[in-house]
Image 1 (cartoon, rainbow, N blue to C red):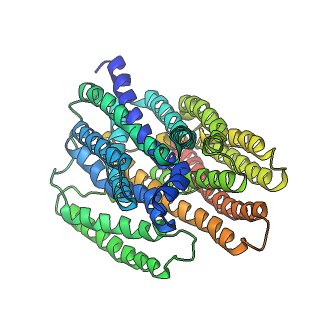
Image 2: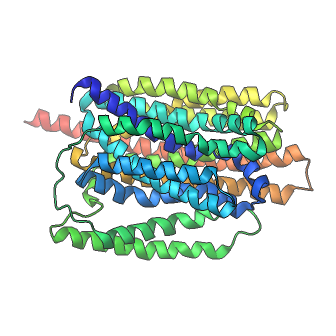
Image 3: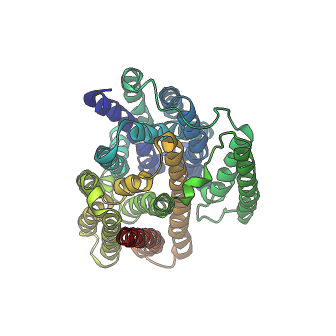
Length: 485
């Protein structure tokens, strides 16, 4: 494949990845309209938002394994068709139950697609070109995450409460139809042969699905409202049992000479392990930040959906620029680049919180936009460089499943972060309503949510520092060995 065709195939894959990420964030601003349209309660809304993430996470690893073993192109095309059907069903949903079910199907499609994108990047590029590709990938993902609320708010304002939220889903239909023929033509029809057998581990797939589902489900069902059922945490016991059974089965399966769904040897690679844990914590913070900030601006500040979404534009623009540059210099600066990026994100999000608490209402959106721009500058030095560094020592034949495991971690992190931050937000709203003025209620609610979010960023920073130290120790040992010989 020539260089031009390679980058065109990459453009198609990343465009589809951006659609799956847009649907993580653009639906958030349509929540009030969906509530009005169906009279939906907190649990239904949480399933519409987090059910997508839940299905996304459950499907990722088996889809990545299938793509690695058989055909990433075939799985990618199938995922596009499912995403198209699910988007259509969401757009025409007559009831909240149909909408929730269609969102879950949409999440399944996203889970089919994303590991193929990551595997294709591993397959198409090597060396510095891979760093540049992940830099562009990170920029696109950052733009999709941050522009999602603005795009969703624009559709809600254009279509009104009845039609606007449906336009959010209708948007996917012409885009998927337009991308499908390019994907069919440009994606590579062959790929390096994977090691091991190509049999499908049905037992392992089922156990992994139960483990991921039972881990994420109690967080998905957490709304912060008075109707939260404490019994939902019993699912974590199911997770412990199914997770242990999965590890036992996979090791037994691998000893028999067959190809397990998860190669546990991947976690012995320090850079991959640390990068994956870092991504879990980082993605626990990011979607939660966008959702709770949008809630504060709409409910506490009274901003229209489109203007609440526009506050995140500086984050998107600065992240895109930073991601593109970071992809070019990650080979030179390594994990230190990620540490610096996370520190800047922490400062930016801290400034958002200070702006919300101390500035007059008229100045808050402007100050928050500036602070989000600072955070975006750091954010661009996190996602793409971390992806590049985490996968640098992973063989191409395992690129899809390694990327899938990372994506599962990110989706689990997203579910946990959304649950923790939104619960902190709404618990405060329920507790203080009637005892404080409305603006104070929502300031306190955002304060508690932001402290949760800053905690997750601090955890991500700790993993980045641990990996930086591990790399420094490894480099020192290598130098000592060289001197000895």
